[in-house]
Image (cartoon, rainbow, N blue to C red; front, top):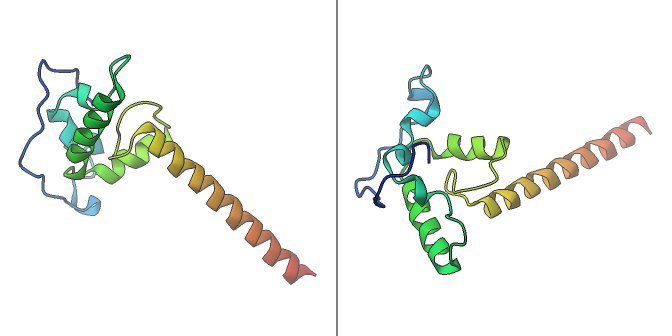
Length: 124
């Protein structure tokens, strides 16, 4: 994802050890520890006119890489805050990230409405 594509798809078989964010080197950017830096970039981004079955298979393989990544949460938050419109980031596809963002927006609106009702009751 963060490097140019290589000539072959490779998914490492050895799981990375998860290290809590607070214990990692705070000077290095989160993406320096990303497992995808060692994998095929094409695994995370769709080629043009990719058949549906091939896309689903590729996305599942990318998600398996993400699942063993020590910075998956940071990667996901980056993709949600940017927002990244393409590819698998933090174990989520672009469509899945859109759903998460829509849920967050709804939750924020509900919280604001709830706060307004509470404020109105106190003031009234």
